[in-house]
Image (cartoon, rainbow, N blue to C red; front, side, top):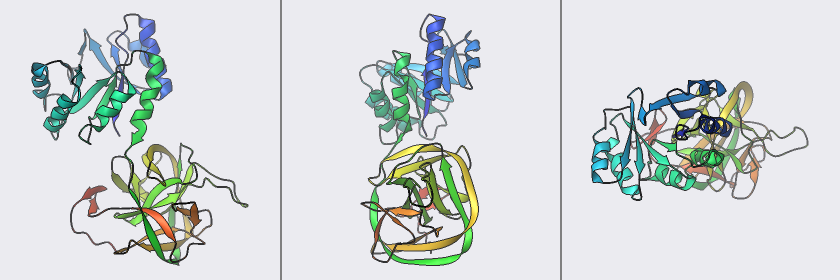
Length: 337
């Protein structure tokens, strides 16, 4: 997840600065740059604050640099490893200095933040050299425009989904399965990527479809057994057993579009399980899911309940090579079976 900080220190009028804070909080932001002397604004909501005086950060852990020429870039580059973070403001030549800084600051322990005055710039800075800057400082000309930045930061890269062919659906012993309730509503065709093996995560649909027996629960994904991997923001995975209230998880739809949601709660309960196995033509993969008609795997068109899955059915999954170490992808020879 990328950081985002709202500048609320620019207007000369205190009421105008306060409006940036109130609008930012209502838009869902929790980090602000405030003028020294505006400490009273912290009572408006729980937030992280970075104070400035005469344009400089008070505690010295962060430094702001204007890059208008090569000398400005050199000044910014010289701070790698010397500050907790560097906030960069650029003029009309924006991408090249950011590319240089992303490369220079990698592994230095210093984060790079780019000032953005509109969502389009923020989106560009967050994707420069694929990795992007570590965060955005929103320098918006109006507090009413802050909500547009929230949409940019909550976006995440699309997933490349493939069709795999079901080879078997076998009941197994009772087991502990995890039901993930999020703070967001999902739609049919959208859910979470889950699998027994890190190199194949099946798209398990949310309980967003009504049936004749239980009401829909569009905020919920009945995700699978405790040992399964689940995809999380930033390209990582976690065991379902480790997911907790407040954690970010990745939601994905059938065409690979993703977004981030917060976990409201996880329920671990003993339930009868099914092992669904599938192949991409070269390897076989599996996922352990609850044996219930409300659990569905997403296909190119529609979704198929695990209780009616049969060999030959095609469902969607994310395939990758290599393996995982502490949830992050690694290129090494790992066999999971």
